[in-house]
Image (cartoon, rainbow, N blue to C red; front, side):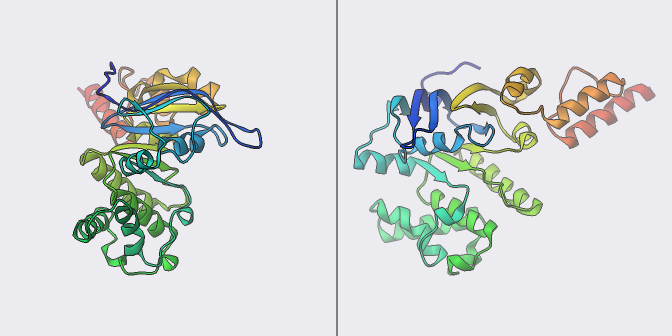
Length: 287
């Protein structure tokens, strides 16, 4: 797939950053996010994923290189950052770092009010955000009385109320049970259908293969590989170099193919897809 200037929403070009204690955050990191895509960021703890995310809306500022949004270098003036943060929404891994208002409605209203929007517009944005993440019944609940999963939804709603073009989510599935993960995935699908570009960090490589359009690998403060998710089977070396395994569904498909139980010309991206291929292969053998 060929990039054009119009395709690129977010660009990191040789970005470097070191923390005050000398620890490296980013080391010549280059990475592009295409408009309208679902992106998964993979890497071990300490690889630089969170540091990269904190650069996307100016919470950290690069010490070298360039971060561009919609083709222009990020404007770090107060007005520039306000505009950037309305377009690029960041959801932290720990929701308690992001929630500070007394009630859910107040917390979701905070961002739009800071943009100077009128009361009716803010009220409508909050209503829409609550509906999108399916927490309307929690609107007047105290934030401190919510479960961990509910808090994550409130954080997402707060970002949605800013009407972002790009949503950044740091380990959004962490700490959630299976049912909550499934529900949150439905939210992501709805956001993507609305045209929001998604960029999330995850340690679940099987989820990344199943869900993402594009995959990016971080190691030692650099993006070491970016590729279309369908190309995962050919990325063994890049994954191994970052200490990451191949998605289990690919390994299973390869073993089944060796046994003659499955065709070798198509790698399924999910268990239901693999089962369907097995049925089709069995049907051909019966004929």
